[in-house]
Structures are given as structure tokens and as C-alpha cells.
Image (cartoon, rainbow, N blue to C red):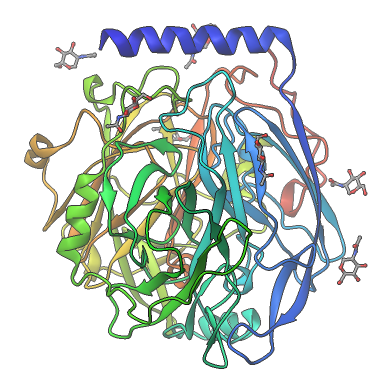
Amino acid sequence: MASRTRLFILLSCLSAIVLVQAEDPYLFFTWNVSYGTISPLGVPQQVILINNEFPGPNINSTTNNNIIVNVFNNLDEPFLLSWNGVQHRKNSWQDGMLGTNCPIPPGKNFTYRFQVKDQIGSYFYFPSTGIHKAVGGFGGLRVNSRLLIPVPFADPEDDYTVLIGDWYTRSHSALKKQLDSGRSIGKPNAILMNGKTGKTGGKDDKPLFTMKPGKTYRYRICNVGMKTSLNFRIQGHTMKLVEMDGSHTVQNLYQSLDVHLGQCFSVLVTADQTPRDYYMVASTRFTKYMLTATGIIRYVDANGGKVGPPSSAIPPAPVGWAWSLNQFRSYRWNLTASAARPNPQGSYHYGAINITRTIKLVSTSGIVNGKLRYAINGASHENSETPLKHAEYFGVPGKVFKYNTIVDDPSPTTSNNKITVGPNVLNATFRDFVEIILENHEKGIQSWHLDGYSFFPVAIEPGRWSPEKRKNYNLLDGVSRHTIEVYPNSWAAILLTFDNAGMWNLRSNQWERYYLGQQLYISVLSPNHSLRDEYNIPDNLDLCGIVKDLPKPAPYSI
Ligand SMILES: *[C@@H]1O[C@H](CO)[C@@H](O)[C@H](O)[C@H]1NC(C)=O
Ligand SMILES: *[C@@H]1O[C@H](CO)[C@@H](O)[C@H](O)[C@H]1NC(C)=O
Ligand SMILES: *[C@@H]1O[C@H](CO)[C@@H](O)[C@H](O)[C@H]1NC(C)=O
Ligand SMILES: *[C@@H]1O[C@H](CO)[C@@H](O)[C@H](O)[C@H]1NC(C)=O
Ligand SMILES: *[C@@H]1O[C@H](CO)[C@@H](O)[C@H](O)[C@H]1NC(C)=O
Ligand SMILES: *[C@@H]1O[C@H](CO)[C@@H](O)[C@H](O)[C@H]1NC(C)=O
Ligand SMILES: *[C@@H]1O[C@H](CO)[C@@H](O)[C@H](O)[C@H]1NC(C)=O
């Protein structure tokens, strides 16, 4: 404890020095979002490009950088980007969800302005509107540690981003139409790795990455897909886990990793095998079908030449979800690694804080007016024309939504109850330390994400949660992260402090569930209305819905 406290004081001093010395650097991007045609499965299909790239460009930033992205929407539909795992401290105005932002109309642009405050690690961005995410518009976002802050491993030779995800051949409008008509989009057609299946006409695609013999590389693997957990592995190589969802981990070795929807992992891989090509493999988990993508890593000889084809033996994926649960339990936060702490105010001693509220969320589904809907505690979220955050800021929340339409402790029969459709907003007391239980009564695996925060997953167990389960919690070194899976007929418990004022989306990462209502917003209001707690509404923010012509409220002051 003493060394952690000293470290914290040291970090606080460092950030104070930086604050007085200079403003944090700015990174500027201009992004043109447009349709394009590519043929990842050999058949041309419509995709969403950013500056003609699929996947979109990587953002390479450093802790506390200010990121300015001017997004031009050249689609024929309203569009928004969101930033998976970027906390936007005091600034849910930049979160890019329909509860916080008006969508960018076709032919218009919007400039996101946010700081990657106190963050490190691997993230991605994605379209939050419609079913756009199914066809692109996503890309990697990395946050490097500042030079002053030591990283708990040697500088890798290079740093590679691997975006894996399931993929449909249908257009986003066809997928949306299917969901709007009340039917599931069914199973995906393929898995892509950085936009490719790995094979064209039965032949391997060009290598995605190269490694020099003897050198160590960082791979950042994120699941940007729609529906399925994926297992990632590299033929003949072990992976040393060093980071997940923005936290440095204890550096265990793995043959393969289950990467659930919305999660990012960093691993170190040393080119210590016979020089030749090797396959990276991403394949579906917990599904009745098996889809696989491959990508080639090429060892280069001293002259940069090719040294040999890959072995055709693709390593198999593990079987069953108990394996995956055990893997989750092996993850530990590296408490001695110095890095930006997600909650520098001190909630990383999370085991010593008393829980003030327990919110149990049970996923449900059902038919409403003949159409499939997904819900949380019986409420299926529907976006309002006026973003929830704007309605609240302009003092007219009651005209748009009601707070707390669901209860914290739903009855055990929730899953059989009827589903209501409308905005689903919980309010929380600023700075409360809460426990959220995600309970899965279904046969399929789930993945949940919370915007604006990092949380501590303290347990995942089969069965139903009860207060006695708290004695099994990991109250010391759970990895602080933003996305957690919940296995079939199991529950997960997460702990966090609601210290980031704003309107924050909690969602299923399974995109048809998200689209059909399995999401909610948590309103965290600071009673002080002070700039120390939350930024003012940005000047360039478009207004829509009922607040469009209302006078702007008095801005927050110091
Ligand atoms: C953006 O992309 C669209 C469609 O490809 C193109 O018509 C337009 O000129 C591009 N705009 C810029 C500023 O590059
Ligand atoms: C990313 O940024 C870091 C730090 O500024 C720099 O060292 C590195 O070369 C950059 N990587 C790429 C791919 O631009
Ligand atoms: C749209 O882009 C222009 C620059 O081309 C910029 O001046 C303007 O602020 C942008 N609009 C918004 C709402 O960000
Ligand atoms: C944790 O980080 C420290 C400090 O950088 C490092 O020395 C140590 O090896 C790491 N521990 C583990 C178990 O990964
Ligand atoms: C937590 O609650 C216990 C029992 O109510 C109390 O004794 C203790 O002081 C509290 N701890 C903190 C840090 O508030
Ligand atoms: C939620 O908001 C309502 C209406 O403003 C208020 O009465 C209630 O105290 C709030 N609850 C919490 C937990 O903040
Ligand atoms: C509001 O501001 C006062 C005075 O600065 C402070 O004492 C109090 O803790 C603040 N309340 C919250 C909830 O932050």
C-alpha cells in the first residue's frame, strides 16, 4: 500500500508540473466518411470508408493529448462516431452516442474535441448510428504513455493493430430493414482481420505484418464485430499479455485469448521461431458454426526477403466456456506498474470503499407489437429525437424521458415480464461507489460496455447473484476496464465510482441487441454545476429536437 501511495503522489506531482508548464499537445484530423465498394469475400459490397480507408485510419496519441477530429458525413444518412473506452472526463458532449449528440446530417460535418485524459492503452472508434458498424467506419485508437512515465516492458520493435470481427455480406440498410421488421440478422458470413479474411481464391493474402528474427512486437487486438466472441492465436508463438482495455496487466503467457465484443488486448510476441511465415488466427467461439480468418506474419531475413511459407496446420480454438471463464480469472492488474490511473482520485483502492448502491441488470427479450425487442430489467431503450443530455442541460428532461423507469433490484421473474419501449435512463448520485450486477439468464454469452468509466470486474460466476457472493470478489487486483463478458446463465459483478459527470451509455455489445433496445443511459449530475465537475456544452454542438430553439442555460462557472 505504501509504495502505491508514494507512486500516486509522484504521479500527481508529475501531472501538476505538466499542467503549469504547457497546454497538452493537439492532434488534428479531417475525416471524410463515405460509401465505397470492396470485396472482402470476393464479391463486391458496399462499405463505409474513412478517407478511403477500410478499416479507418489509426489514431496514434499520447496520454493527455487533445484530439480534434472534424468528421464530414458524406453518407446519405445521419451518422455519429463513438470512441470505445475513451473516458471523455467531464465531457459526455463528445461521446458520440444518440443520447449525447445529434447525429451529423448527410452532407454536414461535426468536430469532436476531446482529451485522452490520464489514459493509456488500446481502444477503437466505431459508428454508433443505425447498423453502420456492420460495414466499417471503425478503426484503432492507441494512447501511448508519456515519456516521463515508465512502461512495464521494453519498447517493442514495432506496434501493430489487429482489428478482428464478424462480418455480413448484406448492406447496413438491408440489416437494418431486417431488424426494423422484427427479425434477427442471423449468423455472420465471415470473420475479418484488418478488413480481410486472409484468403483470396484459396490463396493466402499478402502478409499483414513482418517481424525480424529475435525482435519483440506489440500486437493490439480488438474485437470490433457485431455478434460473436473470437479466439485469437498465433501459430507457433506464445503471447505475453501486457495490457487490456487501458490497464497494464500482470504479464502472463497465453497460447490463445478469447476476445469478446468490444474488448482490446495488447500482447508481446517475440520472433523466436524458425524463420518462415506464420498464421494469426481469429475464429468464432460459443457458436454452432465455425468461421475463421487468418492473417500472415512474415519473418524477414536480414535483407528483408521472404524465408518460407506457413505450415498449413492451423492451431485449434479452445472448446467450451469454462476455459474462457478460467482465462478471465487469470487476469490481474499490475499494481506496481506506473501508469495513468483510471481514477486518480483514489478509487483504485476499490476494495476498501463501501458500496452505496447495488444495481442489478437482467437482460430480457420478447415480442412487442409483433417485433423482436431486447431489454434490460424489462425496459427496451428507444432513442429520442432530443438527445437525453441536451434535454437535461436545457432543464426539460421531463419532456423527453423519465428517470429510473427500471428498479435496481428486479424481481426474479423479470425475464417473463412484459417489455416497455422508451428512453431508459437511470440517475446516479455524483461520486457514489456502486456495484452493478449483470445477470445473464440466457444460453448465449454476452458482452457489456460502459462509456465514461473504467470499472473493476470483481467476479464472474455461474448461477444467480446474491449478496453472499461478495465474499468471492477479487477486491485487490481486478483489471480496471470498460467491457466485460457474461457467460451463459452466469453473472458478472463490477464496481466503480460515479465520479465522471455526464450522460453515459451502458450497452450490450451484441449489435442487434443494442439496436433493438438493450442499452440504457446513466445520468451522473454534479449538483454544483461547476466547471471542475463538467464542461459546458460546446459552441459547435448542433442542437436538435425540442431544445433547438430554446435559449442556452447559464454556463457552468468555476
Ligand atoms: C469525400 O468523399 C466523397 C465521396 O467519395 C467525395 O465526393 C468528396 O469529394 C470527398 N470530400 C473530400 C473533402 O475529400
Ligand atoms: C506513434 O506515436 C509515438 C509517440 O509519439 C511514436 O513514437 C510512434 O512512432 C508513432 N507510431 C506511428 C505508427 O506513427
Ligand atoms: C465544419 O468544418 C469547418 C471547416 O471545414 C469548420 O470550420 C466547422 O467548425 C466545422 N463544423 C462543425 C460543426 O464542427
Ligand atoms: C509490473 O510492473 C512492474 C513495474 O514496471 C514490472 O517491473 C513488473 O515486472 C510487472 N509485474 C508483472 C508480474 O508483470
Ligand atoms: C464502511 O462501513 C463500515 C460499516 O458500516 C464502517 O465501519 C466503515 O467506517 C466504512 N468505511 C468507510 C471507508 O467509509
Ligand atoms: C434522480 O432524479 C430525480 C428527479 O430529478 C430525483 O428526485 C432523485 O433524487 C434522483 N436520484 C438520484 C439517485 O440521483
Ligand atoms: C460542491 O462544492 C463545494 C464547495 O466547493 C464542495 O465542498 C462540495 O464537496 C461540492 N460537492 C460535490 C458533490 O462535489
